[in-house]
Amino acid sequence: MRRIVLVTARWGDSHGESGVVLRLLAGALSGQAEVEVVSLVTSEPCPPHAEAVRTRRDSVFVVHEVPVKEPHRAHAGLLRAALAFGGGGRLPEMSGPSLVEVHRAQASGVVDLIASLGGDSVLLAGPETWWLPGALHLARAAPRVVSAPLLGDDPLLELAELGPLVSGLDAVGVLSRGERRRIAGRAQAAPSRLESSPPAEIVELDVAFAINRPAADQLMVGMSHFGRFVVLLTGFPEGSPAAERSPGHDYVRRLLGPFAVAEVSLGPWSVSDSRQSRVVPVKASRPNLWKLLAHAELCLDLRPQGIVGRETLESLLFGTPVVVPEGTVAAEIAEASQGGLWYRDYGELFDAAKAILDSPSLRARLSREGRAWAEQVHGDQRRFSAQAVRLAFG
Amino acid sequence: MEHLPLDARGVVDELRSAPRASRSERPRTWVPSASFESLLADAELSPVLLNGHLTWLHDNCDLTQALAPPEGGGPKAFVRRLVHRAVLAVLRPYLLKVQDCVAETARALDAVARRVDDQAATQLRTIGALRADLVEFATRVDERLDE
Image (cartoon, rainbow over all chains, first blue to last red; front, side, top):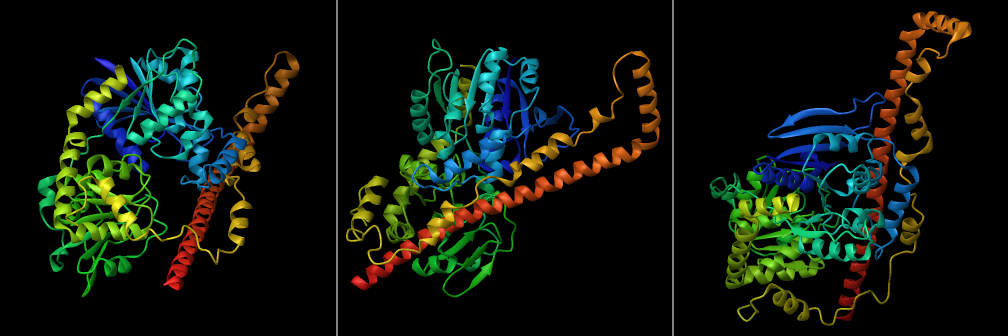
């Protein structure tokens, strides 16, 4: 059986959409190959006598945890300043420590470890692995090296140092059309690692998300007291950055007239209509989110978006139209699927929401088109597996 | 809404064109205080986690080398090793305790530095968002005055 070595600093539940996508990617590959994960552990301060490598089993995967240290002092400060004031004045979405970790993820011995695992292919996932293509090439540690930068619309992709992750490799996996477009442009601009090496093949990965329809059939506890409702996403899952400019639950409800508003936030979830307001008596969980999405008229998303737009896809899989921020992966999905609309500011958000709620035929069309597209593109596990294998082994 | 086109982009374009044709991009009579710009421009961006003293502490808190027996041959080295063994027989528990304390201190400082860096980044984003909100608010005031 073939073997692939997946190297990342984002293995685990604490890494949001990246962690979920990597687990699904490794799972998609596990049917065709042995998957060895090299996890660069950057989230904990390194003790002075840290064990070099700790190996453990995680479901069907073997995970080798490598502590990383030795921060590069000047780089991270410059990087942060460049992101704060470059690129149209956009402030960095990543926190200081995250940026530092991008630049401190060099671990001694990791190239030797990768070579010793004897993989047919090495998959470098996430920007923290930017330094590995050169090191692996010098050490001739793997016959095939591919990457999945996991950058979405992150301005980090513009950094010259991330060039090795998008050019000179055997293949690059992308999670959205926007990421594909930006990486293709970036690869053309960056010089190739070898004069004779062909440009990296770009492989689209349409991550297949499983949803539990029978579990979502039931109305969520507490919702029977309300009529037709809209889901307002201001923070999910726990740990994701909170929306900073939320127009507020009451304001949204007042503008949307007779519809109740169910707000999914980082704190307790709440529901209100013109007569009553309640805190939802259930814990924040994926099945409970599905129960809301499956019965909602519409899903309004106010959050900064991740790399795949997971909640947007899940909403479409339930046939619930979405209204999402323009210029994000979620907006790309809404346009590609014809399953939702997008907004630049909150005025447009309410215009779009009212247009859908006031027109049953428009809502029905968005629901039908969105669901059909999502089921075809992101509901097919075999298709995703084939894409993952193509990225890994060509 | 029955007349809306079938494609989502068409719907968005139509919604944008109708009510917002006369809306100006920026407020004409008022802009937020210049202090916002200076707050953003003068912000300290170098992460505390990369502070030179903290990095030195990490680099030097491992006393393994310092506690190793002296190397070399000959009678002088032999005597040094004897002295080293005698000294460490008494002081080793104390020195190991010191090393653990230094390591714990470094970890605690790391945790504080991470929190401070996160707070600093959040503050910058909040100031940017606040500024944008005020610009938007001013635009709406202008529109109302025009009405």
